[in-house]
Length: 293
Image 1 (spheres, one colour):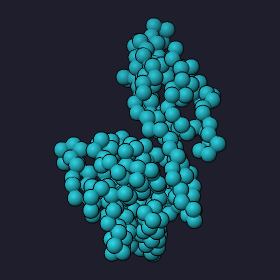
Image 2: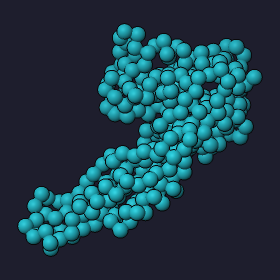
Image 3: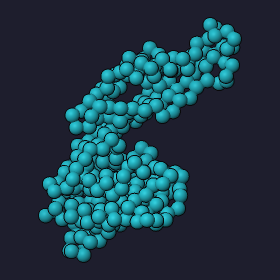
Image 4: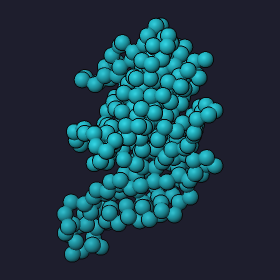
């Protein structure tokens, strides 16, 4: 087992049985705040990270133990930090990936279905500049907030890329900030938008050129959409969220599967059915047998 220090106090963990593994099970062990303690109730495991993704991590360890007991030794485990905030752990791991890994089985809450594809992410910041003035004399100033609101209204009507598998690009306005006081014409304002993309980020950024006369569009980060490997006999689905997979390109052909629903991840009642957790162990092990056969 090796530890990869991503930043002080934050480490990835990479464990192998013998030499370079052909199959690596992987997920992340960071969670969104706030923490709340675990409990078992009515066949459900509640707790922060129950399904996203510490329950997944436990299922992968159990599956690896099961395969090891069957004499399989060409597999590994890669657990990374930072998936919830920019995937810096995955990027670090990608730079030191061993040559020869054939498959990466990544874990996220997919309700135990294999992912056929998942969306990407594009995060942008709109920045509007104005001129401050006393609110009694608005003609002496320029409202940055008004310019920002105008830009957001224009974006609502912009045609965004579509894909036959993943559908139409959609977005949300996650943060808006601006102004200095209620009685001052706002000299500055910003908004952060999160696009769930169906391909590369370029076409979306080009579509946003339409508001360049009102605001500056700052590219904060992007993760591309990906197509994933599937295996006959396993139910499949496509997913609107993103994962570490696009940042683990040096770890072989990617697959995506995990117990739990993304709809309860990050919520105050995050939970995972224990039956689904047990079922995930068998699915991970079965996929391992198929991929290594």
